[in-house]
Picture 1: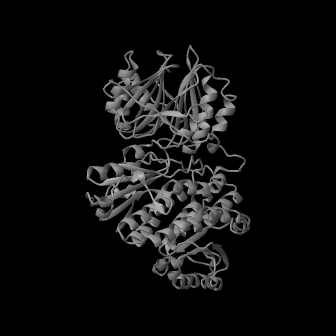
Picture 2: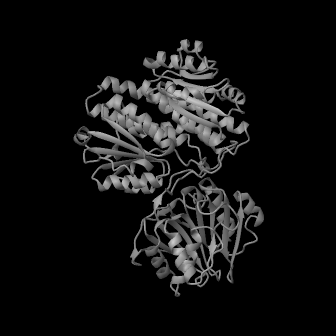
Picture 3: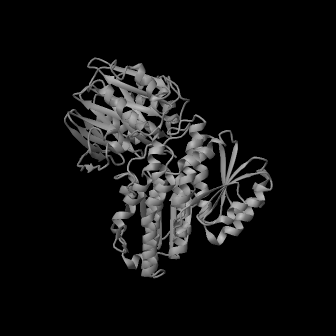
Length: 608
């Protein structure tokens, strides 16, 4: 989940490295470091804390001259955040230097082997093993040394490597951790993700598993693990450079919340033609759609919550059985999959390690795999049988908002398409769904413009210790995401429960002043939800309700009500989640938390 960058060219490397790391800091921010070769030796600076500490230490990179270098921003796995454990890492002679994103699973075995041969370690990281292992196998040919360590390392890695003996070359290699390469004006650049290179190039090469690239200021050469040259083609990135900047907003998260109307429209617009749903990238004939007997949705975090919503939507609208799994659990339960199963994997980054592993397992068992991802050319996008892009643009804040909202839209579109093809809904009903879908961007914008009212309410609960979210059906799925938004950025303990389960233990946690957020957007469940609200309120809870316009009955059971516009019952998540996102955001701001970079978290979970 760390971020790595590298540069070789005609410009001073350090400022470019720092600029790239700034765009990748959402991937990790425990510590940072850069190493630059100045023509005589490799200079290195590392610092615990946010990137600004390193930037100040190097005066914006000016104290590290040289036109070739590598950099790293860390999300700690092996060893606590410290200057010593920060990357890059040297070999003993400081002639080989490495940055690493990933986890070397057999590093202890390798470390013992190297210690037996006299190598000494100064850090607690698995990455230092790579530097010494390269030293052990290096006999003057960098490519040979790299391929040898690839055969011996187990786990995931994206590496940037400098050899002092080869001052005009920068090496990079990848296995199960994302890595992209791009030509810049007068040089080449490597990075973990697209935002780091947008300022310099729009044409990038996505490095596949067990591929190696050797770069000079003017050239790129690609190799496989057998040291055989391979050909690769670039992918053009259409994202705006401004899309990866704050644009005057206090935080990326707030900016990205306000980008949700556009992300929603951009996701559905290309797939609605007149009164028809056209998903060309689905690459499934009507016969194949009708042959699907089961859908399995696999994801992590917020993407999993989108999948939980999709279960209710697809089963209700298209009448296809749906199972939803956390990717980390799916892999280890020996799931029953066959050729009549459609597996849908959802990931903003397209690099989520557990989700990617689930995709590979499903393909081995013969299932067709559809990826719903936001990053063009990502691993899931390349390895899935077919991919639906969500077109949310770059999302920088660790807590997802617009990517989640656009995932919902992609899933609605799939449900509508499957329902129509399978004859469950007619043309008239489909047209009604399409019209409701088209209204969502304006309705979301209206809710966002009501932020001041939500901010005032949030300020009353800055000192809250426990918050519970409850709902039934789709409203339970909304509650899951609302609870996650609050806990991950404000550090307030928050849980979501299916409201019907309250009496099976959870209600014992309710005490005077506990905040309970009740979501009730499904009209056929109003009465049951109101009963649950009364139950917690009579035990001292303060009840916040999120419900549809016109549901005045809820005011008798709630202390504070937020109304959302009327929409199709399947689409209510897209509206009800907005005030909950804002609530979590303003709680976090009021408590002085780092909204965009919450502690212990990183944006893209590329390790298990």
